Image (cartoon, rainbow over all chains, first blue to last red; front, side):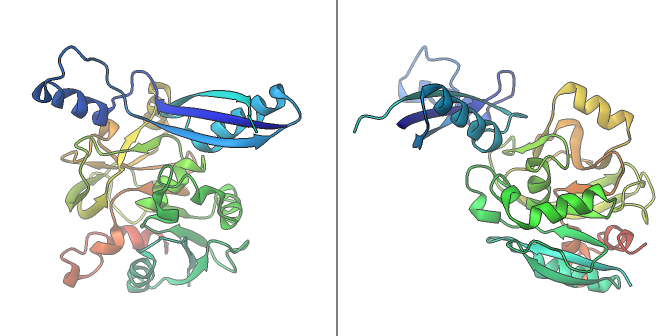
Length: 85
Length: 217
């Protein structure tokens, strides 16, 4: 079966995100008030083949742990769904 | 005579500087393409600076899967000198051969300047010809040199004398001013400054000579 995955990788909570902080500081100058906790991350979309949804999630999870995210500094969340064809 | 391998990834750009720097201290070295499965007949290996695989995803994240990294891991395990300079340091942390990670510089700027670095320990393969406490003028040239790790790991780095070099004037936000670390055995060393760029009077500093010469002893 073919599945679609969307993976979001972002810095671990508690680890400074200077890029997010810089964007947040710039917001008032652009007229965007009352916006807080800006964090910058990465988004990955891909398709994968697996026997069933459980297997697809496990493959995706391994990919995230071994490559897409560095667990020392990053966390990830993945959404895996059956691909519409 | 000591013989070292210098690994070339697609995007490495300091390999010839490293070969020349090593030659100045009497170390012969050979370039080894990242697709090779063996380092050849050498005593140790250097991962040079640059932008392996374009630094895509994260610096070092893809390079750690290069075929040659299996041989690098074996050399590390066997106690041979394994040194990662700049991008090479990033590769070693991504490969899990050194703890921690290197994040984007705190000021979000690429830094290219001379820094003053203190030799924190001389028990590593890269500092054994140096004196602990001496201060070296070494160039840095990086965007992701901001070393970080969790508190437990930092504690272990202190307890096991694994902090090799520290910045006198922290340029990038690095935790505990760390410029370079080693593994517990001291044979795997990663550092952000470039000793090979401080190995000739023409380059403005000779302070990298002691580091490079350490690899010969």
